[in-house]
Image (cartoon, rainbow over all chains, first blue to last red; front, side, top):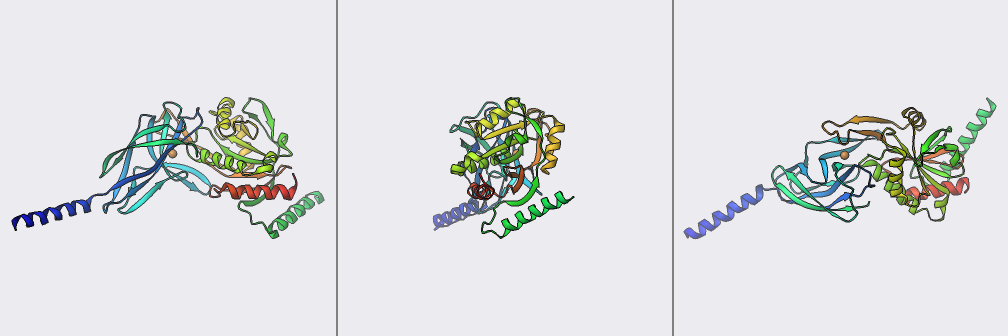
Amino acid sequence: MKRITLFLLMVLVVGVYAYTQPVIRIVDPWVRAVPPNMKNSALFMTIVNEGDEDDELIGVETDIARMAQIHKTVNENGVMKMVHVDKIEIHGHTKVELKPGGYHIMLMGLKRPLKEGEMLKFTLIFKNSGRIQIEAPVKRK
Amino acid sequence: MLKKSVIWLFLLVGLVITTVSAHQFYGYPYVQKIKDFTLIDQNGKRVSFSDFRGKYLLVFFGYTYCPDVCPTSMYRIKETLDRLGKYKKYVHVLFISVDPERDTPENLKKFISYYDPTGKYITGLTGSPEEIKKVAKQFRAYYKKVPLKDNPEVGYLVDHTAFIYLIDKNGIMRLIFRPANEDPEKIAEDIIYVIKYFGE
Ligand SMILES: [Cu+2]
């Protein structure tokens, strides 16, 4: 009897624990192939949060560029501007798309030219889920 | 005075015809005569807008350091060219730099050859900041330098309008494609319609 109670308690604890966690999945990450003399590029992906709890992307680390920042391209009366944002919120059971003309991870000061098809490593830093390592192919599109 | 009215009448008739015709334009119809200008191409040669008379032109203002908007637009232009079929030979692209300080002819050459390895369909244009300013004004293209804090590597970005202008073979603007007009298939359909309408 005691055992069963303990078991039930554990199930409950695990259940509550699972409930409170965001579950982040990164879908289709890619880096834009750019002309060899270009110093900047961008990383795109879809961030899916399969958990109940919200999460936030707060930073990105990479060796390929001197600086990686979270940006958003906005269209202000036809003028395209890029604004630096501190974070991207991904609410529980939703997804956020990082795509051309919208949110992107801007890679500034590329240390070497990118080759189409090569895989690049990034560490995404989330407020709750912590550090997530990904590899993204360089694509021409 | 009379000449001016005749031109206006001409433009009006043209506008009415294009409005009532069956083709629903994807781009925004806009009629404007482009005054001639001269800039420097990717080979360091001075070329004039009038040198391209006889071609249908797609004009885009951008800069090679541009990380998101310009590559997106250049891919869109490339995809559009690929969908023109036999009409591709009547079309030429002008990429005009809004960052003439950094966009040297050499830089432009590398940039455009990435989207057009043949070198036949895209011309990159740069010039003095004053020359660029004058040209941009005519197209109502806006651009502004935005310094980047703590990033000496890149230094600055340039906010800019990202329209693609279609100019007919006589140097008259006909359509404007906005960034939201992102379907190359539909842009190509508009271009082919305009070419058939005004002649090859
Ligand atoms: Cu950016």
